[in-house]
Image (cartoon, rainbow, N blue to C red; front, side):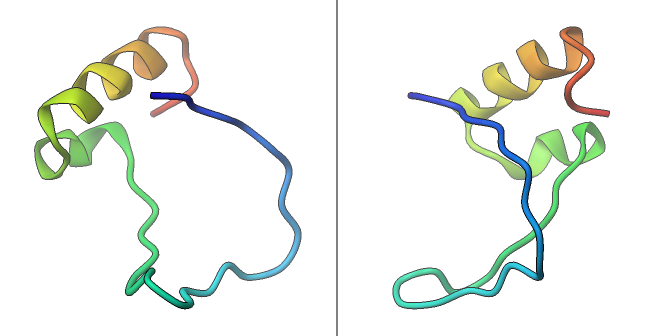
Length: 50
């Protein structure tokens, strides 16, 4: 798995195979897969996910 960060301008909108866009915080950890929970934990420890 690769994670990227970037600056974004404008409003993200779903298209093609993407049905929904949702902004998640660490409080949403229970909503993601087990592997994503590990990523959330690492990002939270690094201060990049609140």
